[in-house]
Length: 311
Image (tube, helix red, strand yellow):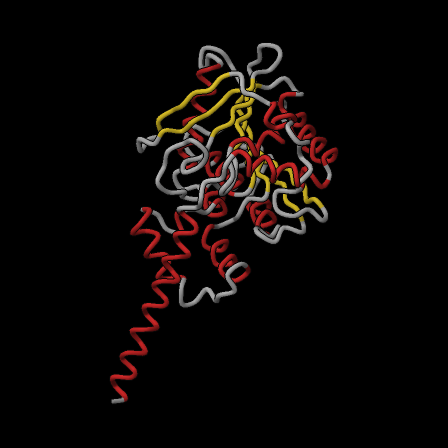
């Protein structure tokens, strides 16, 4: 009798662990796509745009590219007033859309840059069955870096192509900068250091669950469903493998009141980075709120970084 009770209890526990792990993975790789209206309202509430202002910022050109795995990614150009050889590509974070990055676009357009925005895979109007938290997104961004350089006539003509991203986009721009076809500079706003640590932190802080016993099953489910695991997405490990990437200029930005991705993530990344780097920790800023907390300082920090490294 006791053996049957133990067996049934073990089966119930295993079913519970598997179900919770499946749900946790589902929330990560198949987030509900946000609408333009939702993103616009979010940015209005954060103080980044007045009502109707974002909708009035219409792109000059739109297009799409096909990623290495066949997924279509939709992008758009905001062209500078005068012809330029400088481009900044803006990478958005989890759940949102490319329009959320318009708050950063103004920094670069004031410097005479063209700005390229795009919907990450599984976001906006882009295709993609899964969000992979930077695993495939780094290659998507590398393809857009190549596209931007072709647009400027590279390699026949010299050009500057930088990348700026926040949250998951912050991790994506770092991974892109440390991989194939790297950009000329990186601005990483509130990135996570490792996907493993970030997901385990969110399990506790948002779902109020212990990481054990869900960590192992969730890893297995993630690999089985989406083809990657926690250890495959780690800007921190990539930095270490690149010996700190001393020649890549990187500006790290984070807010001290970030409860979604604590700012110690950026401190760890900054410590691992060697050579050309800068750091801005915004007092009292929440997640992706550094620019709205102190807009004047944010602009000044980015401009100072670009000036320092000749961009």
